[in-house]
Image (cartoon, rainbow, N blue to C red):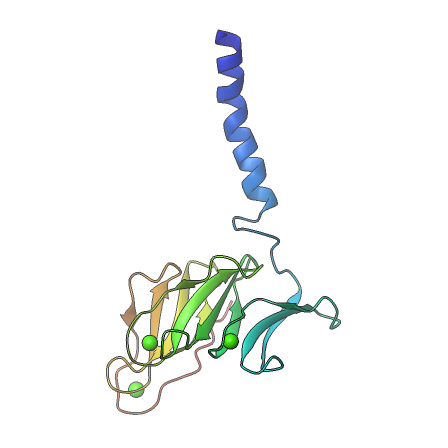
Amino acid sequence: MKTAGVTTALLFPICLAVLLTACGGGVGEPAVGKIAFESDRDGDSEIYLMNADGSGLTSLTDNSARDFAPACSPDGTRIAFVSTRDGDEEIYVMNADGSGQTNLTDNPTIDDTPAWSPDGTRIAFVSTRDGNLEIYVMNADGSGSTRLTDNPAADRDPAWSP
Ligand SMILES: [Ca+2]
Ligand SMILES: [Ca+2]
Ligand SMILES: [Ca+2]
């Protein structure tokens, strides 16, 4: 009995490590070398994923709201995007297979154009929460939102360099 207990104690963390490595840290297969895009081919905007040669088309969202502006995380496990499903633009994140769709922003103004940091821990985006378009950055779980620009002009379309 003692031997079995020791074996289990040793094997569990090893199996867990193998499992996490195989999944790339997320649910499903990472989107490596694929192209995410927006299409309204089903009547409203949805996020689609396809191989770089156009094959293997998959719909990742399916609802009557607009889903657009997809941005793949650097490791391919997650896709940030914008959806109007709660009434206005919000930044969402989902696993690369479309599961686990989570709202990262929650306010009545525009939140748009997510851009991942090279290490995948943060997301830059645009919001009008302070009255006009400004660049913000937040942690990839939606916490710690910080404004980076502050002026009456339109600041938009962040792109995070490697
Ligand atoms: Ca939709
Ligand atoms: Ca919003
Ligand atoms: Ca501004």
